[in-house]
Image (cartoon, rainbow, N blue to C red):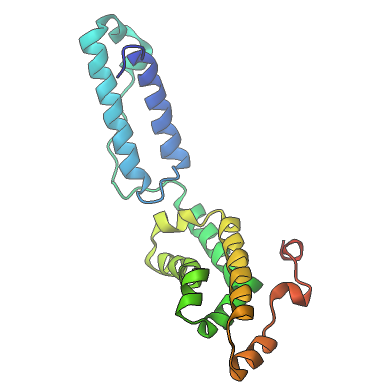
Length: 196
């Protein structure tokens, strides 16, 4: 705590943060809400100790007198059912996306340099990782996919790279025939607006 920080104000903020995390959850991409809730709980304890040691008159304040939030299981996740529902919707959107389908169809046509240049395998893994997370009930991974539009944008930008690489790459007759069978989505009149 810096000299300018008021431990009473910091305590108030920590209580508000704990309540928000408990009800709405956070956005930590790696840890469940429970881990962060317990961390905020430790901050509350810290600020209460600071008040006891440096500003004992604040011990009479309403915020200091508030009950300490309970320690929760580290695995606790707020909005668990909502996250599960969003994850299933996101996965369905990914699998139906024409750019994702384009990537699936053309990934075998890329040589090693093309795979590296386009980052197609990590991009395709977004859907595979979400499918695994749903199967294993990994809520932290599922929560990362609540805004599916970010991943859908990745499919589109990757598909553009793949198309460009395939156009410049020496294609054998079989790959050329396969490319004609599954054209780039925009060539079929599919636009982002039509998907929405």
